[in-house]
Image (cartoon, rainbow, N blue to C red; front, side, top):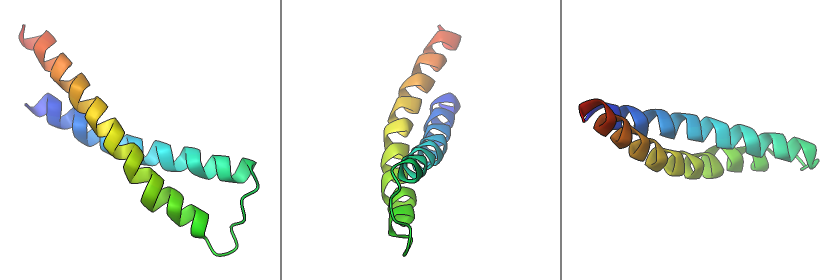
Length: 72
């Protein structure tokens, strides 16, 4: 159970950070206006959690596989 929880938590955190960083890097490369900070807030508080949820699901699945491999 702890391996699944670890996969979910790490997946969520790393997914949030990775998705936010990728979105911010894309914004810089595409020369998106940062005058009011709207793009950065969208990247961190909208795109980041979405990527975190996707990665949490993947992390839970990988944690379950890891648990089965160790137990089995």
